[in-house]
Image (tube, rainbow, N blue to C red; front, side, top):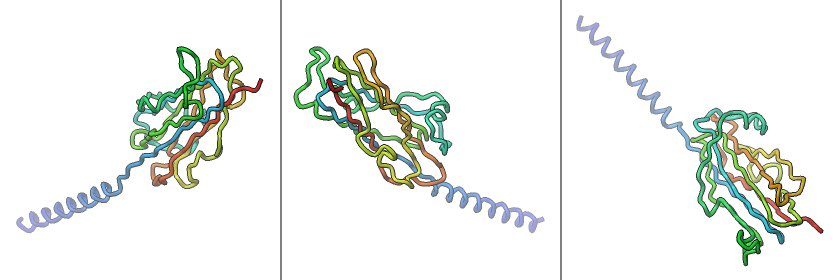
Length: 205
């Protein structure tokens, strides 16, 4: 009887040791993903207002190899995430007088947009551009339309399926939508920040 008890005790102890070891290996493999991004605007003699909003799908941690905008938009409900007021909005004119502000109509940077793939693997940035310029505005990507500065092996992508043609007028603002998506939860994320650079110009007379 004593031998059986010792045998059971030894087996139980061995199972517990294996379980603790497995838990230790799992804990050691837990990773943290945070990607920082920059949104910048280059203004050329325009009266423009640009607002930036950040959204995520709450508790979405699956990763996505299908990064088309239509697929990402249909995954779930996006909830807005607060970003610093200084990084949310830029205007090249005073809303009261509609006159350009001194020293501010040459360009603007929106920085400090940190995206954590631990919170969600699908994020969305919306950039709304409006104007009081009667001639209207045009907007286009300044550079790097293919990858937005993201390395090929980064394990995440910035999806851009916007239409940049067509003028922005006083009654017709433009909303540009970008998705930042983790492709695989099994692979690490390369430390490369994304960059969305926009040129906003006055329509030629």
